[in-house]
Length: 253
Ligand SMILES: C[S@@+](CC[C@H](N)C(=O)[O-])C[C@H]1O[C@@H](n2cnc3c(N)ncnc32)[C@H](O)[C@@H]1O
Image (cartoon, rainbow, N blue to C red; front, side):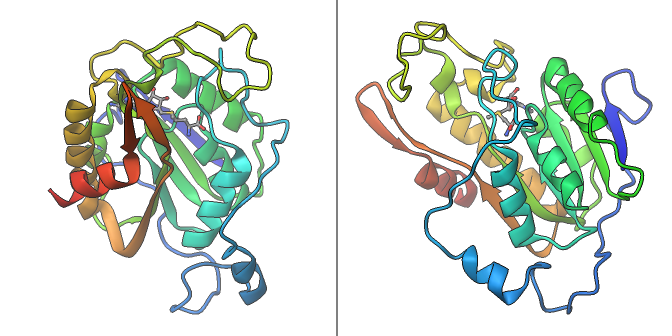
């Protein structure tokens, strides 16, 4: 495995990145993944269940909103072949890069916060494997600049869990926690207060910014590539917000 970090003082900052993006497997050209028919059928179940593993980041003080490696692996396995390229525009603690590395896929992840990019690097270094040829690159930059780094028609899958507008900019009530009175109660667990951080934006500004980001990513996708976005429904000021429709709207306009 090769791991690389790009940040403001790196020679590769806002330059085109050289990274593998073609299949290294022997699958038939018409197959959309390397799974067997049996494995594919199992994935068609409507509800997926996962267990955490020791490499997962579950400490909210380290990162407030990570997804499990197992979820990330399932999505990558479903929509890519070995050797292809995965992009996570909001990579956070680097879960997508860890999962892609396990599965021998190349991946590039972006995050605005240097501390999260450092965390990505630490997690990847902890699982360095000489026999794995996949390359993982973590880049500290605004997702609005992704198109400056990636060649057109090279990405097979965009997979991410984005910030959900300013959802985290409020004190936690711990309604979904078994132990409500834990140390998180009443705390604001936000990524940052950087004005470029999508997690600080009100819904309208956020929707517009997301629409612009995904529009700039479109030319980077290979024909028939996939885009998977992990989104919740939520309540905000007595209003039910359905992110699925919100994204559909942002992407079509
Ligand atoms: C939900 S988290 C991603 C967590 C990730 N799936 C994981 O498992 O660690 C969203 C991330 O988006 C980042 N972010 C917010 N605004 C951004 C922007 N404009 N450009 C790039 N990253 C941004 C935040 O710093 C945060 O780490």
